Image 1 (cartoon, each protein chain N blue to C red):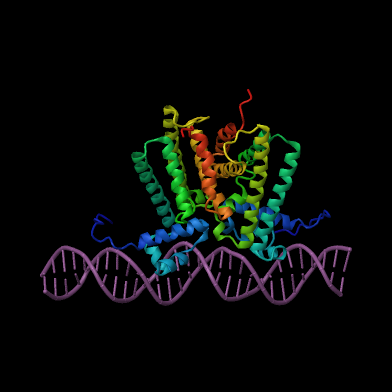
Image 2: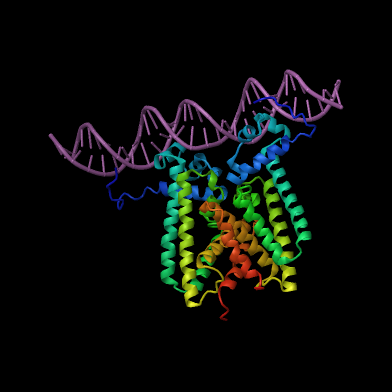
Length: 202
Length: 202
DNA sequence: CTCGATCTACCTACTAGTTGGTAGGTGACG
DNA sequence: CGTCACCTACCAACTAGTAGGTAGATCGAG
C-alpha cells in the first residue's frame, strides 16, 4: 500500500482537480446533479480515469465532504486564534460567507446543500455531512458561551439553541440569496441577525 | 398490478396521485432525485401513462410548485383571517412547520429544497420557486410591518430585512433538523427566534 | 549502466441498467 | 363515433462501473 512520502512525487494534482470539479457541480445541483462524464469533461481526462482516483462516486463525494470538514476545522481554529472576540468572530464568519457568495466563488455551503437532500445520500456521505453540522454547531456554541460569560453577546436562550439558530439563519440566507438570484440578500439577512446578538457599542 | 376500477364516480385523481408521489420524492431528494419509473411504481400505473397527464418532467414539477404556491397563498390568507395578531401569526406559522416535521408529513419545504439546487433547475421551475419566495417574503414583511406599528413585534431593522431573516431561519432550521435526523431541532431553533421578536408579556 | 519488474496514470471499449420520452394500440364510456 | 386513460413496446442518450491495455517513470539486482 502506501508508506511512501508524498513530498517529492507531488505534481499529480488530478485528484484535486477532480475534487474541485465535483465540488463546483455539487454546489450547483447536489449529489445527483452531476456525473463522471461531467467531471471528465472539465478536468480533461476520460471518464474511466476518474475511477482510478476514486473507485466509486461515493468515495469521491465522501472524500470531498471529509476534506471540506477538515478545512472548516482548521479554518475555524485559525480564525479563533486571530480573532478571539466573540462578536467579531460571528461577524467574520458571516462576512466570510457574504464574500464567498458575492464573488460567486462558493455560492452555498456544500454541507448545507447536501443536508437538504440527506435522505437520498449514500450513508457514507450522510455521516460526513452530519459531522460537519455537529462540528459547526459545537464551535458556535462555544463562541456563544464565551460571549455570554463576557457579556459581549446578548443571548436570550441557551448557547446551544442560539448557536443552532445562528447557523440555521446563515444556511437559510444562502438559500434565499440563491432563490432571489441576488448576492446581496445574504448580507441583508445577516445584518439584523448580528445586530440583535451584539450589544450596541457605537 | 390489478385492474381495480375506480368505481366511485370521482374524476381522475391519478394526476393528483402523481403530483403527491412527485412531491414526496422531491422533498426526499430534489429534482434529480426521482424518475418517472419511481412515480409509476408508487402510483400503480405504467411509466408511459404519466406522460399522458404531464407530457414532460418539467410540466410535472412546474405544476407541482405552482400548486404549492397557490396552496400557500390560500393558507396564509385564511390564517391571517383567523389569527390577526402578528406575534400569534408567526407562532402559528412556525408551529405549522414544527408539526409537519415532527409527524414527518412534510419534513421540509418543497421550495426551500428546490431553491438550494436552483442553478440546475429548468427555468420554468426556477421561476415558480422564486415566486414562492417572493410571496412568502412579502407576506412576512406585511406581518412585521403591522407588528412594528402596533408594537407587538420587536424589530431592529426594516420589516423587509426582518422578514427575510425570519424566513431564512425557518428554512435553515428545516435543514438542520434533517441533518441531525432530529425532528425536535426545528422547534429548538425557532423558540429563541420567536422569543427575540415578541416582547415579554408575562 | 542496463535489464526487467513494478507502479502510476491514463486510455479505449464495453457492460448492464436507467433516464425522459415516443408511437401506436386497447378497452371503457358517453 | 370520439375521447379519455391507460397500456405494450420501443428508443436514444446517459448512468456508474469494469476489463484490459499502454506509455512512462521508478527502482533494485546483476
